[in-house]
Length: 319
Image 1 (cartoon, rainbow, N blue to C red):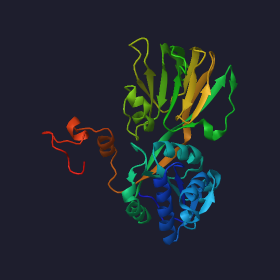
Image 2: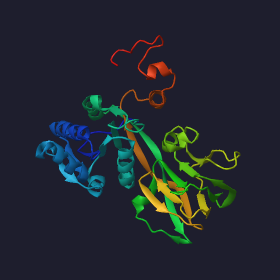
Image 3: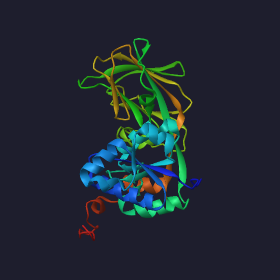
């Protein structure tokens, strides 16, 4: 489905520690202003860009916090890596604002536009040639001895994953898993990853979890170094209500998208359900999820090619 136009206001969100990202923010602000589109620059992004490039960095754009962006912008352009995209998605999901990602990080599973192509891509965006994709979110609740943690709504969302692990001490934890109020199993392990299809190519992948296509309505449970080898990853429907209750492990923690952390004690539990909110990602013409996997995971590519040499040992051009 192509993204509807015209655009009246665009928000720019970027990494706060990258001169390259600041240059990109300035270039994008200038481009959109020249096209007659109002530009909002996220507050921390604007502060850092001005520190690095001076007062002209915003090219006439206005500073705005995430609340203002959610209420006023038609879409947000995120400049950075997957962590930057995760942060922006968590903040803006409740406003149902679509996101476009420009990769300034390492892998960039969600930021799929190269910096060198960003202006050409934005021209395609304004021409209505981008396609839209919806991604699953999880609502989470931490229960401390039977009482809700009472977090703010935005802190309850997980776009990638929720990780319950042993914390700083190198000892196994024990936990019980329930799905739809049915006891499934108890396990001793380093922890458990509960991930969305988006998060299936993140931490869960390194723990031998399955890759879930973004259009699949599923939630994967991936044990971390289970003591019993029979504890294997399992994929649940996204309608499942999941509860992970800590039985043993005084230093355990729950991590939400790697951006929020809560200490857990025996008896505490983490509950997870599908969120009513969705993250809407916009992709440029020619985007393919499988092509992205081939590129990022180096499928069909030999070690000699990755190391900058051909099969006979000669350097690849440009290396």
